[in-house]
Amino acid sequence: MPTLKWDTTPGGGGRGTFTTDGWRVTRTATVSGLNTVGQAKYNQAKNSLGVQLGAPHPSLPDLFASNIDVDLRPNDIAICRVSYEPKQDVDKPDPGPDSYQITFGATMVQEQVNTDRDGKIIVVKYIDYDGVTRDKIAGKQYQQSLTVSTLRPQTTVTYRRTETTSPGAKAREYIGKTNVGPCPWHPQAEYGEWMCMGITGSSPDSGATWEVEYAFQQTLDGWNPTVVYIDPETGRPPHDVNVKANQLLARQGPLMYFHADFGALLS
Image (cartoon, rainbow, N blue to C red; front, side, top):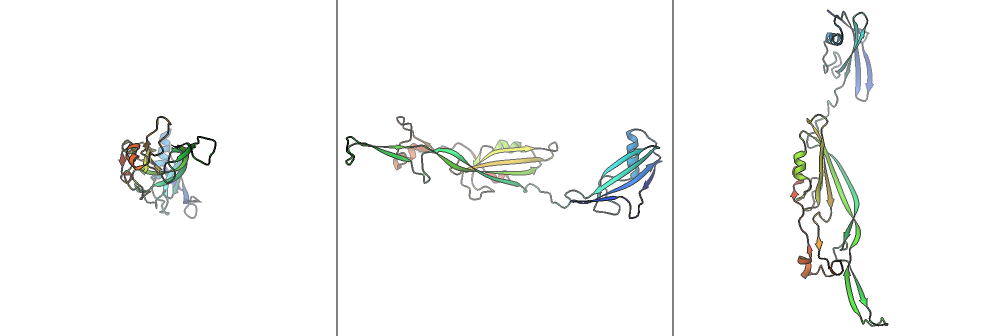
């Protein structure tokens, strides 16, 4: 039958180290009379201590056994050390499904447009003078709309959180859809301003929990395009494409994307 003897150094024995997490303490014991071989000898020495991992320290109740070290010595003796430390995150609440890490970003992207900042068609005019003198207009006036490159802001927002189910079903349901109305991060969002660009997830523990990321992107003019009649002779929109008679004919805003409630997605 093995014999157990704990270190009885004055003060209770053991060694302490103070860290950012608090005290970490090690108790040392000598186990003699081991009568097994191989791995069984390690188990016999460990079991002789009568200490289970997670058990509190005998005199320091805020510390708990975190590991047991067994050092086999000649003559069937083992020196055992039991380390105790605070429980990790013992005072931290479970973040739960409503706890997020949120990241915002904004970039400028180049777009081709045929309207100015106020939505007016960009038009240039030209007069074909018939004659040498220019003080009298003797020619024909031409008007032509232009398409120009401009920079427009696009905003992105990313939500990250821990979930208990795979995000696969959500990804199939929401990716590529635009917002139907207000978003959790943008209560004043207009219909179709934001699109769900991606939902990804990875599990560090074989599917027990998932680290899920939701990515959304905004365009101020909405994701549904505006298509304009193009004059086949000039290859450009006519200068009067915006007049009342043409507005419902020459300018169209086809709906290209289905919509979804992003608040429900993140609930």
